[in-house]
Image 1 (tube, one colour):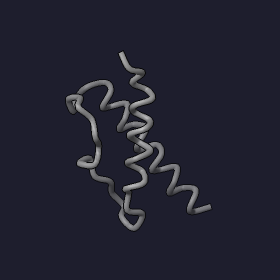
Image 2: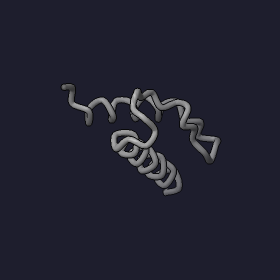
Image 3: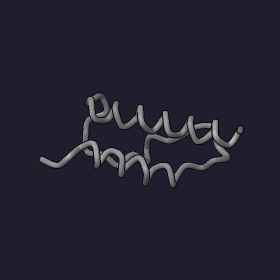
Length: 62
């Protein structure tokens, strides 16, 4: 079985490069995962994505 934490972080890194920094929203359509929307893996990936997105925006304000 593959290490899912590595796969999730790689997907987040790829997704972050696609984020439009002029926008105040992010699209879930860019997530590349084969897991159901309500799965624990998908929720964990979204949590990391939101945390990273907020951290990036906060760093721009400093």
